[in-house]
Image (cartoon, rainbow, N blue to C red; front, side, top):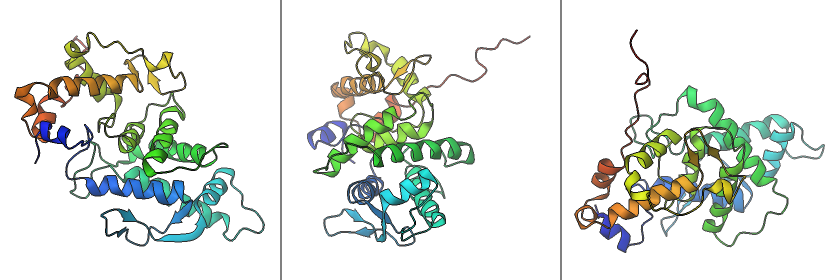
Length: 274
């Protein structure tokens, strides 16, 4: 496994987790198929690995945008080639697949340290649905020249859709869109804990919080957390640590375990015994 210095020389994104190339590749394939080519995916078929190592999906006849709009509006046109039940079922299959992509389960590790549990599912899926609906119905949506360009545009919707809702999948999707800036943490408390642990590295961090630059982006002032200002602080901490010779020689997993294992306060730590 390459060291931090070797990863940097190879231009590997800061927080791209080793061993999960297929997960990142499948997300790219989803963006390409559903969000760029506007094709519904047939999830009953296994993804196809192309000769260049990228993934592709077997597609259905329907346009992805038509299914999303039908599911959103709860109606289909009279001349529609599919009925409402099909539209809802297929659209929900896309939302659920995307939600589950980074979770651990069935004995497998995930991109973030959180299970795809029922307690996460409801609010997460509501946000995933809302993000995709807003992106697909974006009135001035441009033609994207590349998957990276589409992911950058999708990220903006991840950060601004229902921007006051504190649900973990927002952080997960942000990481999948840009693993160089967004660490693979599932909740805001983990990010705030890391910033606090390494506060000495951001004493001279001068960038203004996003709430003063992009007021429509997700924030939790009580934590405090401001997307993407707080994420840029974490990236800055990473760079500061990675610049130290003693740390740059560490392999990625050891580096992350040592410096980016959140020390979360105990839930009852602030309660005194009576």
